[in-house]
Amino acid sequence: MVKQQELIYEGEAKQIYATDDPALAIIRYTDEATAYKGFKKGTIIGKGVVNNHVSSMAFAMLEENGIPTHFVRRLNERDALVRRAEIIPVNVVIRNVAAGSLLQRLGLTEGQVLRRPIIEYCYKSDSLSDPMINRDHIDALGLATPEEMDQIQALSRRINELLIPFFARYGVQLVDFRIEFGRCGGKIVLADEISPDSCRLWDSKTGEKMDKDRFRRDLDDVENGYQEILRRMTQPVADA
Ligand code: 5GP
Image (cartoon, rainbow, N blue to C red; front, side, top):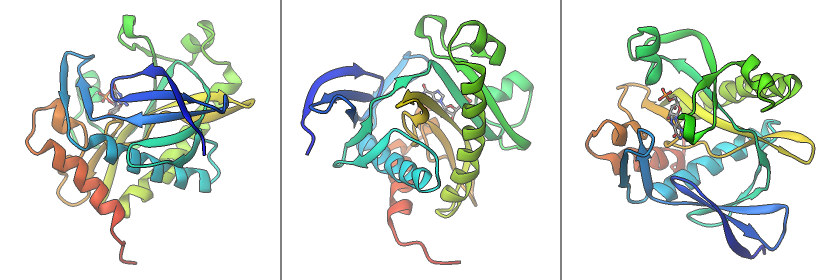
């Protein structure tokens, strides 16, 4: 049993604690929600529990399919045990369907299926508001080497290929999502979370949003959107 020790990082919706094993940390998922660079703040009751379960299931599935990740195991309703990694300050966004910031930027219509998935990179920097960057910027700023970015790009495409059918099984369309990678034991590993906070998840039939966009866009039933994802993922799935 690992023992929780001091808080080492507090994010918008997560706390990270050191443990008595220097190689391991505990992620605690909270119910806090922020959007628009912190201008909108709120609480979504039960969100942390949903995000912990959804993320743990997604990471376990990815590990089983050969994706190296920081995930060790879910500890309880709100906590997960992870390997400590040196986070690479590049957010990776993978898009299958046009939504969010892509609409205005490229003049697309929400829901338009993209001819192929798009990968975007953003520089993780609060003071610069996470600007979009390309691989030249990443190399010039020394954020990651070209070899590391080759791995990150290939892993990101593979993660998307695995997550699309994973969510589709529960009647959920993976529209887009944001992930982070870290360095751990000389390897690139998937870090952070995969949850309705970091993914756009729509009902496959009705297109109803079941993710943080309900909060961002002041839609009703924000809590239910999150709970519905967990309900679908934890009830037995009938074989097709
Ligand atoms: P967009 O650039 O369209 O606003 O967002 C692209 C993807 O990144 C969406 O799946 C969205 O949920 C995710 N995303 C945007 N901002 C954040 C954030 O602050 N934290 C996390 N974890 N994901 C985000």
